[in-house]
Image (tube, rainbow, N blue to C red):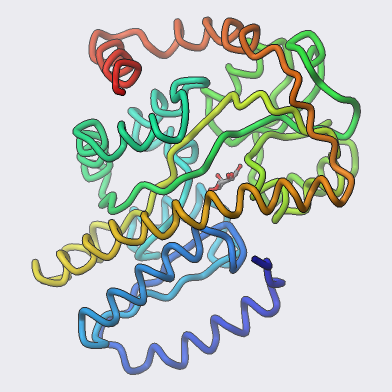
Length: 325
Ligand code: GTR
């Protein structure tokens, strides 16, 4: 799968705009990733089904490559109805939907299968209600794989190796505290600023999954990738409540079903892209460090759990997640 350039994406989108003239309802959907990325293709699959099932009345236009803004801004715009839909990581919702902090705890999910079992079950429904209270209708949970540290300086194998290094994290407190627990420094910043910040030495590295490391070009400037798998954060497709309330119950059902089906597509594309991106970055010179003392990483995160898993409700949720098979 290829990631097309922003210019081409803009052209494709203007083509989409022209076609949208025939639609009765047009929903603009934002994504930070480029065309071809599994999340973008997932929402496009949803758009195709919605268009077909609504007899061409409802069109979803996907704007890739942060054309509508950086992730946190697009989430706020979706809450206020400026944008109709957003696909974003739970990590970017932490300030708005507090329960997503717990869902963003390091090493909470054991595997993708575990995450699917949690998100596709009653816990996923509970979380969806928490989004609705904040004017966001959660329609589908997508895969984001495991996030790992990468940097421009040296191969990292142990927690000690991270000491004193500077890593970009997403803009939330959990991830800042996660870095402190590891003895490293966190620099929270938007995704779009990471490449140049590594290149100019403002930060030593960042953390993400293989497809993002590849498509963002970060692999070109930070060749040491440590497979520590510290985070597995769900990704969400959400609709603005303002746009949602304008849809008839029948149209809402079309949207819900199409979103659910798109998760199946996205998860399949995700698995393929994770492999393809790993192969691609390695062929281009990235060094993937697999011999990692993961137990030490897991143990080092204890203070993060102590800080965030404090109320009986939080403890109960984390326990239920851990016990989900
Ligand atoms: C990616 C995720 C994006 C964004 C990005 C980041 O893995 O798919 O939604 O959150 O990470 O680190 O900002």
